[in-house]
Length: 209
Length: 209
Image 1 (spheres, rainbow over the protein chains, first blue to last red):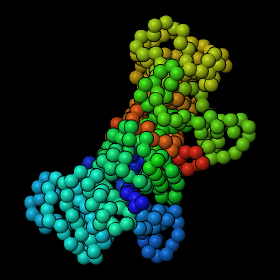
Image 2: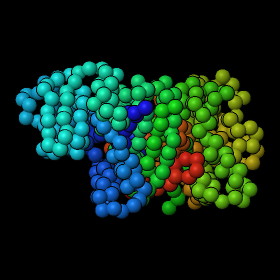
Image 3: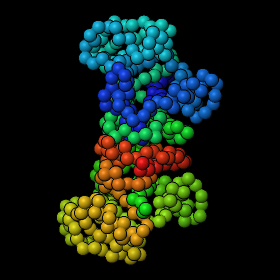
Image 4: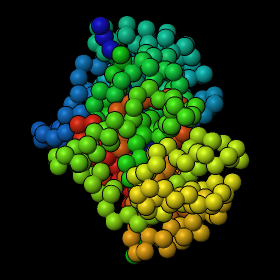
């Protein structure tokens, strides 16, 4: 069975995944430090053929992904109705997805075909429907939820996530949007399967029971 | 300079230190599992002369402590005014503190001398005053804040904690009282100095900058 997976979602030691004030110059909002430095370093190491705990997790995140789901805020800083359709994501002409990407938004717009095989689809359907569309597009491979934390939380609350990998950075934020929040009884769907500390972060994996 | 320290405070992977519903039979409230199992196992191992990561943290927690501070809820399940003074803590006649223990409460009562050198003092003074009283009682040694999370949080927010050791258990709660919450700008007083995974938990240490 194909899986719904989350990877490399980095949170502070106090659990925050994004700070307040997300905007064009600050996709993750106002955070004291670059939470994702470990990830970019590990991506470089992976490309250079180096080994390591962080590299292993990055490699796992790229295996067997056939489609992507993300929230509106992960696609861009624009809020409310699109003023025009010039915003094409944070990632330039050739985004790193190379597959169908379903963007949750209350304001659908035509699909967008980018270089390298990435196609953004904009949908206001419920998460269960979007999950089904994404699995169909993935053609038997797994589907990855890219983020942000609010979107991941919706899928977690519904018990739909099969595997979630997060990295806890040794940083405190004090405020922001938490990843593992408002879960209530939904936590009964998951178990903490891994806690592994590297030189940079603590990797944590939740698996569906 | 003597230090104000916190040790062995165990939280779930989603950051909760106590569940809802604290009561006589459930000092930590309704939690899915015994969060502190790692701690009791490590205390036994320490007593048996065994080594290990968890054992090292337990040993550190017992070094050079001259007095203790705790919140009312850590002392007992009684809320509001004391109905009588028969409640003498969760720990029986010989509590494991063996020093002066300052209990924050809006309802002071006479001090209580227990076997083994533990003396409970009940105070409605502000945290700065209680800290000073505890340092005085400690006679040059460090002071340990036992808990609970709400009390530790007050001291953290005021930037008064020199060292905080917490253990993140591979368990999810979904609800309860968080340890690292409502900290806001106070996080600037601290840095995450250690993240170490053992077979049972991830140890995390915050130090005052």
